[in-house]
Amino acid sequence: MSNDTPIQHGEVTATYFWDDASGINGDTGMPAGGEPMQKGLFSSPSWPLGTEGFIVYEGEEYEFFIGDRGPGVPSHDCDVLLDIDGKTFADMMGESWDSTNYVVTGGNGHAEVEYYITKWGDGAGKEGAPHPFEQPENKCEDAVSPMPAEYKGEDEKSEKKDDSKKEESKKDEESKKDESKEETSKDGSDEQQAQDEQQDQDGAPVAGEDEGQSGTGVTAETATNDLSGTGLMGAEGAPSASALLALAIIPAVIIALVFAWTRRPAGVHAGADDDSGKGLMAESSGRHGVSSLLDLVREGGNNVSEMINRLRNGGDK
View 1: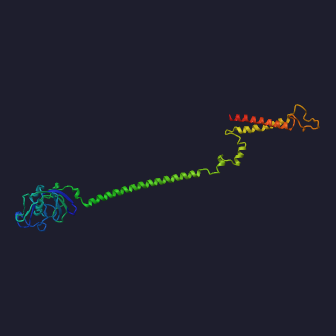
View 2: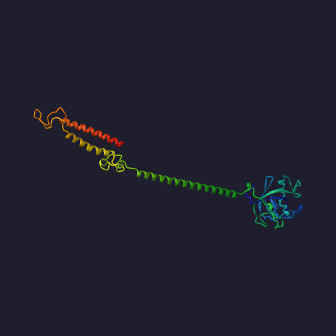
View 3: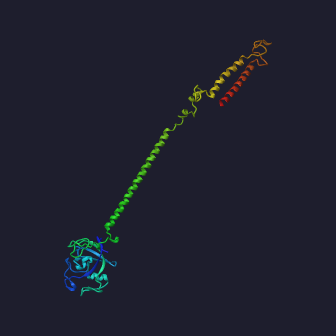
């Protein structure tokens, strides 16, 4: 395969020639391009002189350059559009070249070949689709075909690689942007969480400081409030059970003391002297002495306790 990258491809019918000004077998003179007749010198009815390329026949490549004009009349109607030197044509056919008669042995004078242009020449002629000899208006467009994949140039492959790299780079950038957005969102979430935790810590009660305020601890202020008149009131302003209990105890105690003190014995007058001349302080076997007074106080206290229990039971209800 040629090392040069093809720029045009197609299929044409080809024949062979050998022009060296010998006049043998229709020889018309030296090639028009100024180069002597040689192996690899092809003739085209329209391509610029000096154009380079190669042909493929049955899988084999043969390099050429355009050095002459032809064929003539056989090119009309876009029939035969390429002339191959006789020696190259003989190699293609697997035949031999008869240098005496300027013919290829075997009698096959035509072949269908693929051509590949690798460089346009700077001589006379026109690039692109070939046209018949001296018929420039008759373009043979069917002689040009899309370039096969295996012959596409390195530049085109390089462009595809560059496009692929650009696409990969673009995907990488988008992926990095997405990762950056995720990290930013995560950082913002972590920061918000930290702020929320800090606010929770700032709003939490300090140990010892809120115990007096919340009522879970016991302080002097709490005890004082419990004994105040406000503390004896319920949530709706009504006296609580403890308040009623306290109010009931005080008059009960007073009544018991008064009752015990004023109750007099039914028998002997309290002020009468006994046989020893003692009066109120004399010993007594009844309830007229100090011991009787204490018994009365105890009895009054029991009455008070019973009253308190009744009040408490009533308050619980």
